[in-house]
Structure formats: C-alpha cells, structure tokens
Image (cartoon, rainbow, N blue to C red; front, top):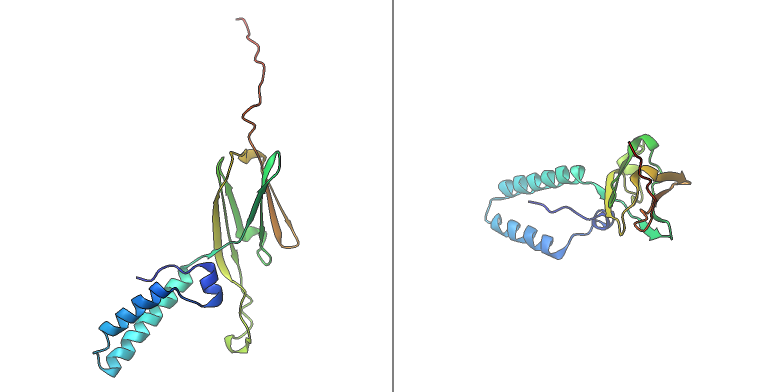
Length: 165
C-alpha cells in the first residue's frame, strides 16, 4: 500500500527513502517475471499510484499567532472561490478545507514548468487556547485568508442578582 505524500513531496516530486526501499523490494520480488509480465506489473503499479495521487489532499500552509484578545490564522488561498472554501471551528480546533480548480484549457504538453498545487486541500489546527466560535471572523484580502478567533476570557466575572419568587 502506498503512503500519503506530503505537500512538499507532491510539490517537488520527491519520495522518501523508506518508500523507495519498499518499491525496490517489491520490484525485486517480481524480477523473476518475464518481460511482458514485468511490464504489466509496472503498468498496474503506475495506475495504483495515479489513483492514490488523485485521492490525496494537499496540506494548506498557515501562520498562527496570538494577540491579547484573539488567535489569528492566516493562509494563502489565491485562486480559491469562496464557495469552494469551508471553515469549521470548535472551541479548541479549526479545520480549513477547499479546492483550487485548475485552468483545463491548457494542454499538458504545453507546460514548461508546473509547480502550483491544484485540487483539494485541508488543514486542521489544534488551537493553543479556547476560542469563541460564534464570534469568529474570516476575511480574504488579495488571496490572503485571515481568520480572527476571539479568545475565551476564563477570568471574566459577572455579578448575578437573585430574584425572589
């Protein structure tokens, strides 16, 4: 079974050494096969890899920082339509999912360089402090997504008046 590639591995086309060793061991098992059988085996492995590649999601790159009253999450989402973006927030976690659609009018052979990531992506972040999901705010400016998550003030006190019935 093939392991999920990281965003960097997809971006650069590299593979980890332990994955390479697995491929070598697998190919050594099939080295005794005849040439037509070996070609069929290699073609099947390439098809499996293509299916896994299509199903994988890219991992969104982020910056997370805090101010006195809020936690801020930033990410570059240029080229993502707002309807293709989903942000789910709980008190201690945020998940950002989306899809960047590729311009399909360009033929594969016409590219000189292909480095941009196209397709589905997601990222889940465990937050360092509890936040109020109801008061969260998301803004997109020039391709930069800024999510402001107000912290819950655990030291806030309120005087409660007792009503007599």
